[in-house]
Length: 438
Image (cartoon, rainbow, N blue to C red):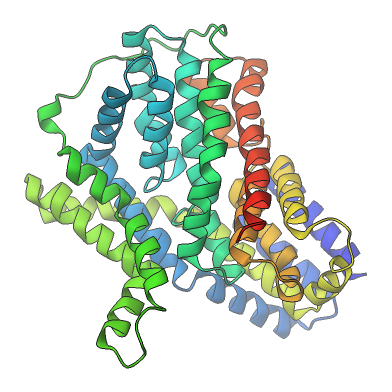
């Protein structure tokens, strides 16, 4: 019965989000109510479970995602993202431009959420394609594949951060492992796959195909642009391992432990960006504050989706569904990492949202973490890889790519959808390989 209710719940969620087009947060709450009551929980128990799930899931995640949005906004508005891209393109040259674009997309994608990153890099893609006379899609795919990988794999992006929280995974280790797994995924889905698209002709909208460049003198310096964009990565991957170096009696232990907290690292990064990329360059604090407020407003829908997924996960736990599924899955012949990837991929294809796919899967797979010696950080990456599987017409990213590059649906499937599938499959293979050595 619990398995049947879970299946009905997931199908109902897919139906409400993908076909009825009901708000995702409301859909999560409705499905949570239905599963809870059908499992025999009282109305009071269901209400308390939903409240606990929402509060427990958001927690300090609000700080991580909120600060991440603020950092991305400043990096974009200041021109730091543009500076990073220009430097890497000059460094690699025309011959290796696809590799330079892949690296640029990855660096820019770490602090920026996907949609914001997409809007920032598309004009650069048009400019480079025009100046280098290389086929547009062969230039676009390497950069956008890197953005997609960062979005699906790496904290502080919403889905991997939230999944890591639900599975009690270490954010710093998740980021470190994610960087390792990301490399082959970007290489294969980006420059290598992009090179196969040189014969696909496209004619983008002339209003979008604008090759005017912002003067370099108006952009931040190279060093500070790279430093601010990569500061969250440096802090999370440096201070996490240092926590075990100092004895508990050492004053440095307290400082290092504080700095190892993900939200502290993000806060420091935001404050550094505010001063170096905004205030020091002549922007008023009032204008900076306005930018930060707009950044937070933009992530409100994402936080609601995460909250709804937390409610569903708690219902699974409190109703006994998670325990039942965990007992059942413990004997399944499919390796847990592959199983998690498959569930996330199935939900992604049905619903379209990588965030919904990742968070829903983590609620289902949570019991498996408790019963088997699987590193939760690798489980986060397996779920993240699955959540990127075969983006198609029910995904906003599909239409963003299609419209900006003026493609047919068939062309978009042959380029964007196939790129996302490569990212997903290679990501799984990378996780399985990493699982053999960590």
